[in-house]
Image 1: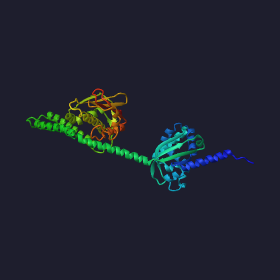
Image 2 (image 1 turned 90 degrees about the vertical axis):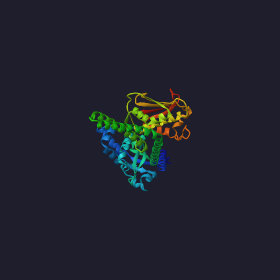
Image 3 (image 1 turned 120 degrees about the horizontal axis):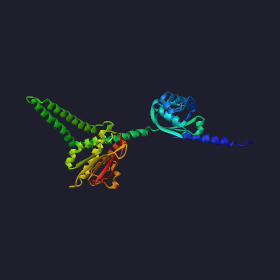
Image 4 (image 1 turned 45 degrees about the vertical axis):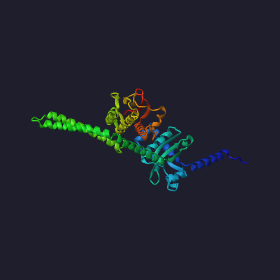
Length: 408
């Protein structure tokens, strides 16, 4: 009596399990015939092509040809629901139908991962449904040696559109919070703005009156009038710059990063704060290392960070009646590739247990404080690739905030 073929039975059971898993998965799964692409890659090697990545970049049409050569053997029900229109048959074609042109390099990278004998490849990309609509997807490909040797490839797709939309909504919320912080800060800076703009306007008026007197002389002094006019132009530009910076803080302007000197940002911010410093009897010391390299950043946002930290220091020192009120702002380059901004005060300081909580939204050490200034500072600093932390002021005994930013 013939004995059952255990090998064949085990293979049948394995295939049964595989098919059940293939169909039951909540993700979209594809079984692809990759053999024609393998032939194309072998032809390239025989033609002397050794750097496939460079060759793909130089011949983008080749990537599309590989897509059209990759045939769909089977898909699961989730794939039909995600890509199709209720039927599997239209999906059993080449994969080029489902890859927009902008995503071709992701497909190319998966091919490079396969020929490099990597176990798998994963990347976020855009894919296309049969109806032409596109969506954000997490694309994964596995390269088990036995399947790859047969030219069979298994890939998975997860729709991450909802996650992307949630991330975009979060970014919009963070931008709205930053905008609200700028608006709230404008009230505190109104007196300072009036004071700073008044200075160049008064200088323009004084120089203009002096110029008219020189012109009214029996022998007008043209050289003197010319010099006074140059001063008026410079003062007018200074007033315009002050107004432009404040307007930028009040409007929803997109972040515009440019090469800038952080020392200039600090000096400009000191002008914003001059009136508030004088009103509160605070002495400001600037210790800015000369010839620091430039960094890439948004001038208005970095000004906002310095203003927020300085105003926090001023408000903290108001709690100490009769005490010396000093703020030190320093700029250093502690190591290559970064610049460090330090702002310390002679206020009451911050308990060690509170220093991490300071950067949490709605946490405040001040009565009636909103707890938004420091989280916004951290958001801006991190958006510039840097980090911020709080510590005890070594010289003044109060609080010290240190901002580290990468150089351009």
